[in-house]
Amino acid sequence: MANDAGILSYGAYLPRRRLQRSSILAANSWFAPGLRGLAKGERTMANWDEDSVTMAVEAARDCLGGLAPADLGQLMFASTTHPYDDRQNAAIVANALHLGSSLRVLDVTGSQRAGTSALISALNSGGNALVAAAEHRLAQAASPQEMHYGDGGAALLLGRGATVARFIGSHSETVDFVHQFRASERAHDYAWEERWIRDEGYMKIVPAALAALFKGSDTAASSVTHFCMPCTLPRVAAGLAKRVGLPETALRDNLAAVCGDTGVAHPLHERPQPVEARLWRQAFGGRRVVAAGLAGEGDAAAGCGRRLGRGRRARSSSQAAFTARRSFSSVPGLALR
Image (tube, rainbow, N blue to C red; front, side):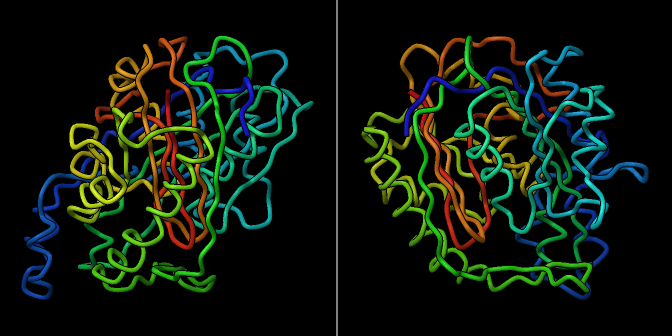
């Protein structure tokens, strides 16, 4: 469904601290020599006094630039690591941003698609909204997740007017494909073998979602100039691009080497921030950007990119583009015209 809503501004926060993956290998190679193939690059690490709320606040401050619109109607805060189970985490974010009390707030959680679900819901609801997402996941020592997971937050200001990217439409796929989960009494995620996730998840579910997205938004795969797939598994994004007919030159960095997988915030990082607006600048003038991901449930969205508006740069280094989500049982995708 197309409308005139879109992204008005964006921001991101990545912790200053970095953990070199080679250091993880050095500490655990005696126990898990198989980690050697993942020991390249670095990932972000939250400091002792940071959590998903503080990172969401920092990202939102970067997005708003110290000035919130007077007609802001709602704030959605997406995370699977909210610090409180029985307290409105989004209200803490709103208070820290001095947004006032006449505001509807909502915590969005439950799966890795929380960020894209919040985004699409806000875009379809109309009116100005702030969507923030952040993640601070614990990983079991010597596990692939310890190599992949990064901490960070991202935020988008949505509404009508001088948009950076206009929302064209969305598509959702729901498949009960359980590639990973975290039980309520557990501190760490349980994940299946990576080949299973790649072959039965990404390579089967994502292409169907992208095909529906292209059809629903009247977008030809060959016209896509930027394809953003926030998947940290090697060669998955290239394989997907080839399978759905995207140009080889459209593939973009998934940020795995510089910050890792930031969970529900990663789609929003791939959207506006980590590339520090570079891909956004490339997106204006009729170019199309598509972002996709796999989640416990999934979403797909399409947008039309315009010249940079008042979007702000990230406070830490990396690279970014538009929308995507990695999680399972569904898929998010995004197109910019």
